[in-house]
Amino acid sequence: MNGCKKLQGEISVHGAKNSVLPILASTLLIKGVSVIHNVPDLSDVDASVNILEYLGAKVKRENSTLIVDASEISQNKVPEEMMREMRSSIIFLGSLLSRTKEAYICYPGGCDIGIRPIDLHLNALKKLGAVIYENGNCLCCKSHGFHGSKIILTFPSVGATENIIIAAAVSKGKTTIINAAREPEISDLAAFLNSCGARIFGAGEGTIEIEGVESLYPSAHSIIPDRVVAATYMSIGALCSDELVVKNIRSQHLMPVMPVFMEMGCRIDIDKNDLRITSPKRLKRVKMIKTMPYPGFPTDCQSIVMAALTKAKGTTIINESIFESRFKHISELNRFGADITVNDRSAIINGVKNLYGANVYCTDLRGGASMVVAALAAEGKSTIGDIYHINRGYEKIEESLAQIGADIKRVNDEKKQEETEECSA
Ligand code: UD1
Image (cartoon, rainbow, N blue to C red; front, side):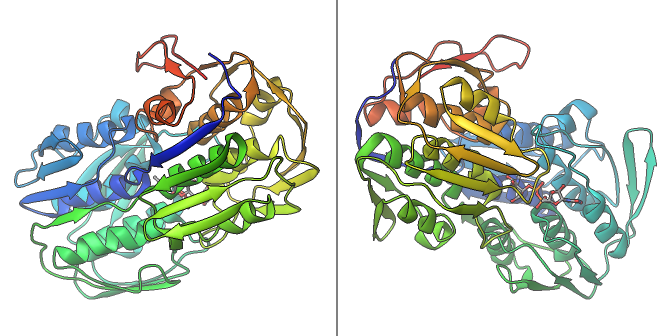
């Protein structure tokens, strides 16, 4: 399949994976039917649904709506293979423990982007009243119901903040989270739980207060658009299109990435929930990008924006401060003819004039997305393998890109990691 096609038109952003996953986990708190709209069809969502169903919930999908009936929960142990399916399965700990008062889970799996400890989750849940001990690779957790506490996070972990919010939602007393993560997905989780009767204040800010309630009632909620998918399409627009309209975005969620695209020489026009990105003939380098917790530049956009910068005029430095091993995609980007070197936690990207088609592999979810961005901008045919990573966070990406003129097709749709899986761009 050939890259270097001029892309144009409109491309729409689906619901945010990182919102859906904690919200699905939190439906365990509700003895009734939760209705979640704008849920993307992703393998990580399937993994969450499998866990919910295993635990006894009934889950039905109607197009992009998931209907979760958690009236009856019959299990309190999440099997190891389900936990290993995705890292964010740890988010089930707070909700399962809240619901069943006794939970058994294994250490979670996830992207290969470095050590991903869960100490902040466990310490916080202990402060809320959980007793947790390890048995081999399994965590045995008990509580007589959570009670309020003051929790100071040493780092604004997204997952730990979500686990605390979920655990403290149904509890006795008030919980305060200091140095909470401020990502939009935290606010979305709080909005859902508040619509169910929770009393969560300050989500989106550094201090969150949760007044525990006795129980929650069923509600309906629509998931916010995925800002990382939006940034992926912006990178593709910047690199492969004169003008591209990215539809169904929340512009305030894209504030951390917009200045980077503007420094590349792009013009960005916002019209309500649509964003038009107009690109120069050749992108300019960005002096320095450092990944930071929200509202800083997101680590999830690092590889994706890096792919766009491989063809920019000049040298860009990207410093990765969130995950210690999130540069595995670089050796793959260099197969396209990119000139990127790594010095400790910094990548030095010397812009080249052309990229050339290559056979590459996805190293992780966002690294995989960066392969798609590069392949679309490379002369000639590329083949991308191990696209099961991409399926975790992008719904039918090849169909969305084909609609704006990309010459891309999925040539093997097997979902299993072990089986050969390819996507050509
Ligand atoms: C979430 C996102 C992920 C994103 C990340 C950072 C989901 C499903 N995933 O992941 O896409 O890249 O936020 O924006 O929402 N840490 C600890 N101890 C802990 C927890 C985290 O040391 O108990 C460290 C991690 O190793 C990492 C940093 O904190 O270095 C950030 O992790 P965290 O914010 O927790 O990310 P996730 O919730 O796993």
